Amino acid sequence: MRLLLRRLAGALLLLWLVVTLTFVLARAAPGDAAALLVAPTASAADAARLRAELGLDAPAPVQYARWLGAVLRGDLGESFASRRPVADVLGEALPVSLLLGTLSLGLTFLIGVAVGGVQAVRRGRPLDTALTVATTAVYAAPSFWLALALVALFTYGAATWGLPAAVRLPAFGLRSPGAELTGLAALADVARHLVLPVTVLTAVGAAGVARYARSSIADVLGTDFVRTARAKGLPRRRIYGAHVLRVALPPLVVLLALALPGIVAGSVFVESVFAIPGMGRAMLSAILARDHPVMMGAAIVYAGLVIGANLAADLALPALDPRRR
Amino acid sequence: MPLATRASLVLLALLAAGVLLVPAMAAVDPLAIGDVLSTRLLPPFARDPAGRLHLLGTDFFGRDIFVRTMLAGRLSLAVGIAGALLAGAAGTLVGAAAAWWGGALDRAAMAVADALLAIPRLVLLLVVAALWSPGTTTVVTVLVLTGWMGVARMVRGEVLGVRALPYVDAARALGVARARVLWRHVLPNALGPAIVATTLGVGNAILLESGLSFLGMGIQPPSPSWGNMIAGGREVIVTAPWVAIAPGLALVVTVLACTLLGDALRDRIAGDGGEQLGGRA
Image 1 (spheres, rainbow over the protein chains, first blue to last red):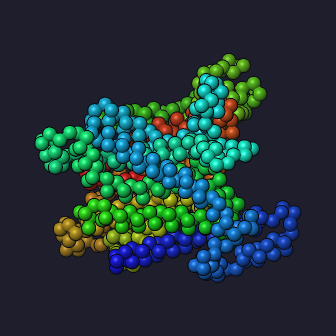
Image 2 (cartoon, rainbow over the protein chains, first blue to last red):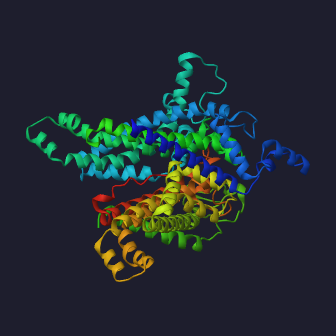
């Protein structure tokens, strides 16, 4: 219990450091939000009034104190650009990204461990080499380029090679425009739109997980208890399923926490290419518009997710792996 | 030498020769825009009305994509290598100083490193890059600002380990100054993992540069980089996908070769202890 509290305190301290650093970085940059917001024809007095209204005329430490105080009260402020509460802007975007992220993270883990496991079992054989090159190549590909390649395949490719209608997947947005769908049909529509983005995020994530899972499963395959299991004639299915996975899986749970930042980064690009209204797109447009409150809100959410995931992995590991207690 | 390592070296050598020679030998300036209407968006292996063969086709302004990809490679490779090397050097300095002098310096440096590591690197990059005026210097600067932490932690750990070895005590007992002991005796024996991480960092830096340029916050046109070439192809992805696909292929091959080389180096230098996951982007 004391350990839990200490870890929690550490995580909160880290979160505070992160948002403070982000604040400093954002404010240290040249470029003035008010200048972007006022009309080009506005007078200097108008710009000054807007700056005062947004609280941008106060000295930086005062701005920081005000902002941190509001955040501690649960108020993320108001977007400079849309004048809506930041919590509302992010509240609309977050569920979309969470749906995309959890689907991808789950598939990333399943596929990554499966591929890594196959490689470990076939270590040094042609299949292993082929999969190593394949995973390293996917790992080396930028997610936005993979996304564009899929868009090309399902637009240009579908038209050029005449893909059958059943496998033509929508390449943009989250819903079919203009279609008034309800119930299951609406759900199926969203699912069809999610196939390509989830594929890109999963491919990139799973390639990374497989690279790691391969070596950690191979380590377990070399242990004495696996040789014993083989020697006493257990069927392969039982050796791998019951003995190897049980020892190899817990450390891989940590991978879920490590894979999260990659999925977050990937989602910024993937949401941008596939025009999906999630956190990544919200943050990108906030950054481009110097919309500090939304940007800081997004940074808090992202950092909170990553720090929370690391904390959860730290705490889950002893529960899953008695040797770590 | 394993086949993969040899293949990577050959690929990188070919690429280096390509980026240096191809733009220099090209018949037409890869930045010049000529007769746009008759030469734009030609598919790969097509000839334009003047009879010139375009190996990978042409872009929206009728410029040869193969030559431009090679020209972009100069900038992308230079930025990737510079970004990774400088980040590695900065991380080594911070990590070594933190471990060697300890105390408040150590705690402060590691707190900042942990905080920066807790933000996805891309988010950090975007926040910093978008707010400064875009360009090559900005990209290298933000790559260093957001890339030193991993190496710093590694070097710190190594220096802490090496510091406890008898020959360090011996050097101190002989009256060698502390800073000189660090530089001459400790650092050379603590650098292995940092070198591996920096090599693997080259591929990562190239990826991040391309990502920033893709979003319009990195290297600005008309200077071609792989990222901004892919961004340029995005608008015509539905009608002329090769414009975005070709520079991406060059990028994938480069990062793949860098990663395979880094892996090979890790196996050589770090042995079994070096199984740290090189975090992506």
